[in-house]
Length: 348
Image: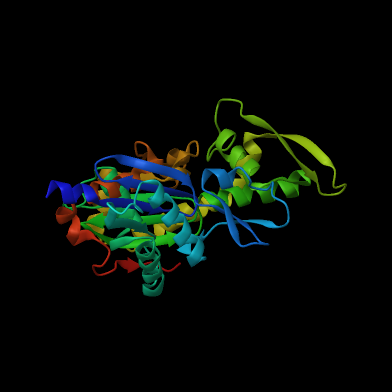
């Protein structure tokens, strides 16, 4: 039996808009790379996937296109999604004659339609996996954070990823109420790019906007002096130009999106059963995902919602860690996988 267990591998796959992560049973997190594919338009040949493709971002000639196969957590390019999954599973030895992937637990946003869920299953199966278990991202994040989600009390988690922010109140092993927002890390980058264009008449690429968010950005004023030299193209002259961007400018650029997230959390709380809201007030709100690494975002949300808010340990990997915990003990978590009745959605 042990021989077959080694031959038939099981994996957790965090199929994110920005990053693609894989957990291999018995080994831990083995892949953490950008969800990006570089294609030669003339030959339709794939030139690079993941980290190698990201190096080409905003630096490619006209015949090379960089494809993000997921938009807002939803597969927009089925073929490229399939290629990414197949590429990384092969790197782990899944294409060997003596090695197969038996089960994959895959994270998905909470608001996917049945057709979109089926497309995720099909992409993973076509990449060489026998059985696919779909797990909604807030559930996976809560498990990865080791929250007691099977208890009859509320656990509120806000997972701010690359393409979507997932807000969910979980109790008795399932999501009681949830909301998926298209306001997340990618939207933060777009807000910064637009602000720099309007304020400084300077065009910048996505990597620069991302660097500004990480190095200078915050949700509330900070004591330390944060600034960064930014280079781009002058809108008026078309020539290279450099400006210094400081924390207050980046903070201003992010305010609308941050308010959208806080307003959505308020709507979830307003529509939740009173007992669960009381539990949330007692336990607080947990933030996960890469977007929760923005400076002072926990204090900002705590101030807006009047509920203690904290960022979980290692928020970037809590979803994939949750999938890993499920893969290591599938029988225990079968009842909370997303083929159960879907939680009540919230429409704003």
